[in-house]
Amino acid sequence: MVTAMKNSIQNNERCEKDSVSGSYRKRQLTLLSLAVLVIVSCSRLSHAASIMAGAAKVDITNVEAGPVNDPLYAKALVIKSDTTTVVIVTVDAVAVGEIGHIKNDYLPKVRARLEMELGVKPSNVLINASHCHGVVCSDVDDRTVQAVKLAMQKLVAVRTGVGSGREDRIMENRRLKLKNGSIVDVRHAYSMPVDEDVAEVGPIDPEIGILRLDRMDGSNLAVVYNFACHPIQGVPNGGNTADVTGFASRVIEDNLSEGAIALFVQGCGGDINPVLYKDVDHPRNAEPLGNMLGLSTLKAMRKISCKEDNRLEVINETLNLPRADVDERIAATEAEQQRLVQSLKGTSLSLKTFLPLIVKYNLAEEFPSYYSHRYLHEKKLGRSDLSKLDTDNRRNMKQYIDNIQTMEQLTRLQTNLALLKKHQAENVAVGKRTIDVEVAGLRVGDFSLITFPGELTVQIGLNIKAKSPHKPTFVAGYTNGYIYYAPTSEQLLNVGGAQEDCDCILAPEWQALFEAKATEILKRL
Image (cartoon, rainbow, N blue to C red; front, side, top):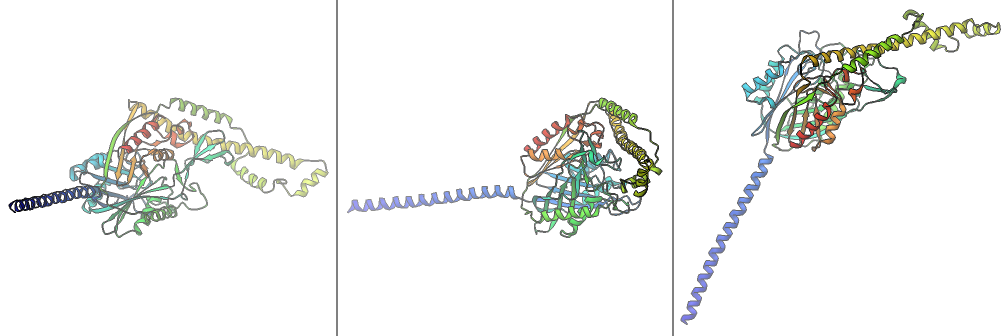
């Protein structure tokens, strides 16, 4: 009996211990599970935490420079995470320094003030020019800083989304490959080549790159859209204008939430013109083209879903690029110029006599000089006076047309030769064979952008997009300075025929160096 009671007591004690031990283990497991849950939740929250953004615009139109058709703006988008602040500025101007009405000290002055007054690192300030040929006010730097300050005051939590649209109706590649292998471009500075000599045209990039930023309540705060085209169509009244992209931005803003800002970031538009750029039958009018671009952007934007994403990073590096030495190209262009001058032939005709003749001989090719019955009478009488007159007139007209076409080629060569000589003198005077340029990479959520300060031609943008590890990737020329055109190494083989390969300070090797650097930065974003 005593033994049985002892065993019973010992069993009870063991059960109590086991119970206590089990409860302890359960509590430990529960606490451990909670800890893991907290860690995982914090990790997710850290990744999905919101970034802050604010946007504003300030009018920078020079109202004293003549009639104003529509306003020019400096627009600012400030994006802020816990560790990084980025400022994106777009200006309706031809360039950030070097040419046009924005001076070379604009970029350093704006950056210095933003660092001093707002604490924004200079390398985190990206300023892109639309490349419209509008005239901005003289205090554009002050107004740019004002736009950034206004945007900073409007910071709110945002969600971001990225997507692409398409627009292929409003632009065309302006470089024309001729049947003799040379390249010419489409400009108002000189005439078009003969239609029969044109063999093919270059590519375009119809992609519209879009970064959408919405407030937490779903209202639109801003949209950044990237597209490749020279906005130089002009308006019928010839007034100051932000051109195609100004009209596009207005259409976008008119159809978004109240106060939303549309920022156009120029892409690789170096060799891309507005469509029908040389039309002489209709007034030059950028508004219809801008409306199409704006509506295509809105169409794509509607399909973009925004999400919380705190990824924000800027990589800003200096790239050393080789300067061109175009002495041989200048000599070759001058030799071609001399050959063309010597090819001009004498002709009896003047403009006054040529115009009625060319009309008459195209209207009645067989009997241009009189009615057909007179030719028949002469033939019956064994004479051919009118036929001989026609032979002489046709010979003189051909010589006159040949001279006109030669003079058109000379005009093109003379214009581009002046560019070659200008940049050769500058490259020699600077005293060094290289130039330092800024290359920046920007990551905002799923949005990836590479920038360059020159007028990149479209093929370079297509190359970078194809090589990028991020899909989609967008490319912006005309950013953080201006170093003229940046054509491909193949385009630089063309001698004197097109602006892109003459209005350039870079040696052909620059392209491979830049594309490699762009790919490297994109991989690090």
